[in-house]
Every structure is written in C-alpha cells, then in structure tokens.
View 1 (tube, rainbow, N blue to C red):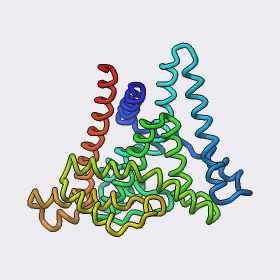
View 2 (cartoon, helix red, strand yellow):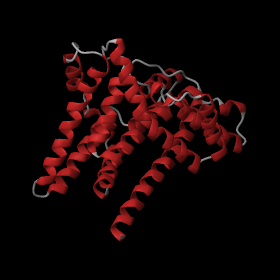
View 3 (cartoon, rainbow, N blue to C red):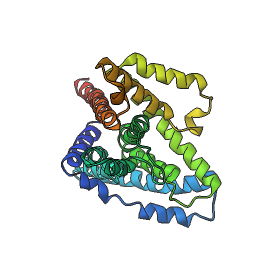
Length: 289
C-alpha cells in the first residue's frame, strides 16, 4: 500500500507540473487487439479483449518484484501504468482550458474534452457539472480505487473497460457493446458510490445523500451494471446548488456553468484529499502495527 500511495502522489504531482505527460497514452494497440477479435461477439469478445492485457500487467508486476531492487521496479511500473490510465488528457488541465477560453464558443468547445469519445456536453450548469463529476470518476477516482485495491492490473482493467464500454468510436457489434457497457458500469459502481459518500462528508450531507436516495428509490436491482452512475452527477450538482444558495447566490449564479465548474473542482479536490488521507492513515497504521 505504501508503494501504491507513493506512486499515486508522484503521478499526480507529475501531471500537475507537466499535464502533457497524460497525452503519451495511445489506444492504438488496444484498438488493434479489439479489431483482431471481430470473429467473436458478446461477452466472449469482451473477456478476450480485457483479460490478456490485464494478465500481462500482472505478470510484469510479479516479475519486477522478483528482481533486485524489485520494489523500485514495481514503483516505476505502477507509476507508468497510472500515467497511462489517467490519460489521454489531464483532468485538471481540461478544466483549466474551459476557464481560460476567451469566449463562450471557446469554452463550449473546450468542455467537450470532458465527455467520452462520441458524446457531447451541453453548455449549461447542470450538464457541465454532471460531465465534470463523471470525468473525475473515470479519469481519476475510478482509476485510483481499483489501483489501491488491485494494483496496476486493477487500474489497467478499469481504464480498458471504460474505453471498450464507452468509446463510441470503437467499431463493436451490438452484443459486444452491450456487455462491454455492463463491465464498465459494474466497475464504475463502487468508486461512484464511495465518491458520493465522500462528497457528502466534505460538502453538504443532506443535499448529496438526498439526491442519492432519490436515485435509490427508482433504481432496479440490476442498475449497478445495466445503467451508468448518473446518480453521481446529480449528487455532485445538488451539493454545488446548496453551496451557491448558502452564499446567497443570485439566480444567474445558479445557472452559470463557469461557477459550477469552479465550485465542482473545489469539491472534487477536497474529495481527492480525503481519499489520499484515508490511504495514508492505512499505511501509517500498517507501519505502527
């Protein structure tokens, strides 16, 4: 766990200083591998697309651990996997690009980088807030949770599953696309639930949990894998709405996409610090035990 925490801190620090590092990730090899499996369909194609890269990652991680200075090798490998999984663009840099745009057209264009390939973000506060929350989940928090639980292989599994299940530019048959979305939704479920709980702790509990409970009341038993975590966007936006109202925000402030972005970024940063603090306490507890 200590190695995982160190790799995470180094990766986040590097991306903050040099966000272009996230752009070295290329999906061409994975796309080529998926295209080679066109003779299969459905869950079989999904398993064949995801398992070999993940097993290879597990093997490399194990082999590095058997070499002299194995922990250093595993640290560098974990760092490389994290930088890959946080890509292809740095999350904070995409938020800064929206703020830095000089006009509405530029801001709306920059906001599209927060969407999944083939999707679009409408230029209004609620739609932008939901896009930011989901981008934070899939480009930061989801990667981190599965990395902390399963190591580099967990982070890679999450990243490849999201690419396979949500990239509309991948030429998949209907059955494969459906099962790929099931896997992507299933891997999103746990980090999304934990992120909602974290936002409630660091923000406005009643608003966040209230939005989450409204989703729970209408959710079906299979929602955890058949539907995406839309409850996360609703919960995050509810938190921001209460924050604006608490600050006596005017009606135009409640509908200002840029204000939504700034406050959402602040809430997500507090959530990230909370996650890292929990992991740090777990590491410290392990040392003291």
